[in-house]
Length: 252
Image 1 (cartoon, rainbow, N blue to C red):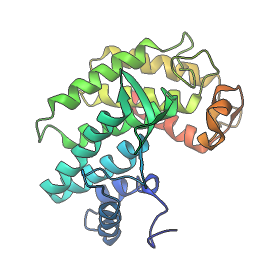
Image 2 (cartoon, rainbow, N blue to C red):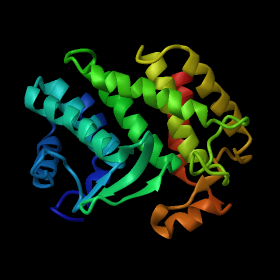
Image 3 (cartoon, rainbow, N blue to C red):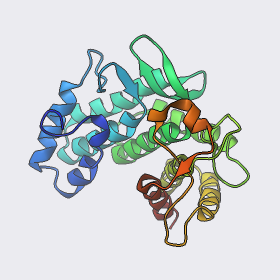
């Protein structure tokens, strides 16, 4: 634990649910202070010198929920900025990167789970915003992103661990990408054709469920480096099951 609260920005996602249930809960003010302590000069909230795709989901989304529930325009604007700045740093020549460092280096290009974090953050944040601010650039980015990911979908409905490489699939990244598409269709953010893309993923994922309902085929932690991700080593992870659950909920 750091700052007496969480160990980094990836741990702050649950605050979105807390804010929906009780926007005045005292933990939310602690979380906002935690984010502000990690705010860079340009307004980006990040850990250290690394801009991550996870922050689109774990910072922008809960920050938007808190801002909307409290009708706090400053927090709403800050949430929008988190998405825009990540788009500027992580989307390069149409590709999606997991990380951007202060020296300008990017890594994990088109890594499925990184694409999922960025996609879910963008969709969930736009959904919470609910048209209360004009953000045509982010709607344009969502449509571009949806068309782009759909172009890489495999025949089995899933995505390779690195979307543009012929490597083993990652069921967690696939579930997350499809969940973002399905949620966006359900909320009126994307045309209905993407529901078919998401349903194809759901069908493909079913073959990876174990007899006791666990999702196999999940890429291991990226701490093992790109080589581990590019191998066929896969695990069972509750994270993957959670992303598949979001997909299922959005399709029904």
